[in-house]
Image 1 (cartoon, rainbow, N blue to C red):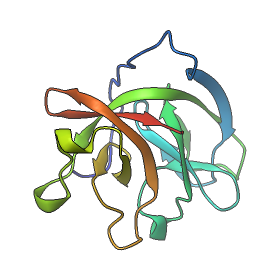
Image 2: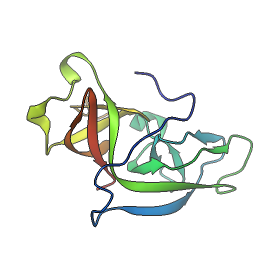
Image 3: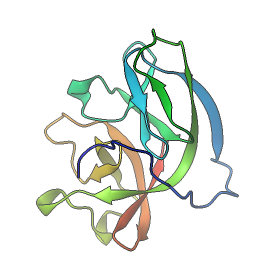
Image 4: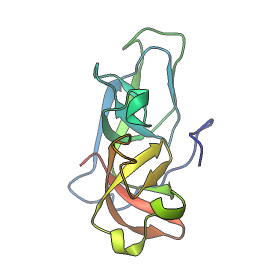
Length: 144
């Protein structure tokens, strides 16, 4: 699945658990983070849409609660509201698809709405732990 081009609704699972956290992160200049998209930090500590490590992602942090469009701003000119917890993401395809056998395992970022079973020969950052499925969607506890 391709990266987000618009906001999406991302229901959070297990909202009464102790790992639920919401915080603000400075948005990288030139970046646009969509609501419901997975957020990562780049090497400078600024929030960007989660993606391949070659695109600057170094650490998955959570899911954006609202759109943060800093395409015309400098680093940190805008903040993203990010929440940690378990969220549904699209599953990768073919040999990288996550199955029930992967529950409890670390899964990896393909883009801001898709996760995969492998790190793609070290090109993908860890998204978090697979905690189950909601239909075809993979439930991932992001940011742990």
